[in-house]
Length: 311
Image (tube, rainbow, N blue to C red; front, side):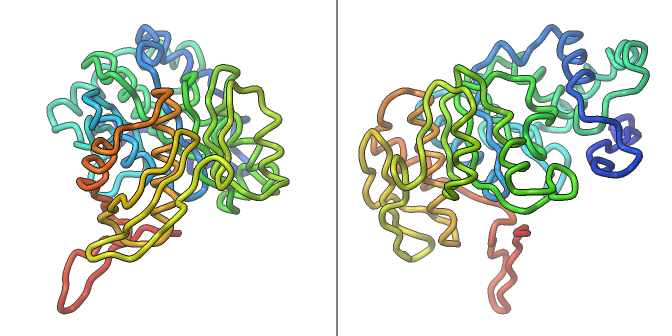
């Protein structure tokens, strides 16, 4: 793990005068050296300004409740770097994490010789996730974009489903300078065989996303939505609509009205992935067990202490 900490955080330097042009060359080579493990497992790819992490965790629970093993890669980590690479929303233990990182270290020299520079901190972790998920034979990968989409290290996959939660003004100086530029970057995770779940509702930005080549697209409000959202003891009671029907009175044990929007996108993405309506029991069981660390998380009462990573 000390080896990992010694690597440059390339992503923090993006947008500066000395930053190199964005490229997936290093990540693509790294994947080739590992045997292209990212191609072995179907994937759901998630980008957007807000809600990526919550939507990812919901998706892992939903797909896992059908009996499949789900790997997920998210960033940044909250407590420990292990939090970035999970199976069934549980971080890798220290031994597994060390092994996963060590396998990337073994091929680093070939990357340096071919490109003139080592892989970045984010690229190493992303590659370790793809490699570990293939080695442990999970059934589905849920992958959260680090920033943007088109040039993000995660974007070596061709996902079956791509979720764009929304488009906001974060990182304008890096992937902007306009919201239209950001929409174009985030749409870069879409390929011709991808089913798109579009949570953005601004007509101008939706048009940019919709001009990308894809297999099918579902839009918030017209195709999927939280049609009802009511406060309940310990969370919220919501009705979730998708093209396959309405799931009524689903309990979300989390705080914040925005989480119903994340839940509607997650259910839509899961149903797009399976190509069918999820059983009511699956959704109820999956979301009843949901925890969202540092998302309006109440960690103490009297006095009340809330941890929230909103930005």
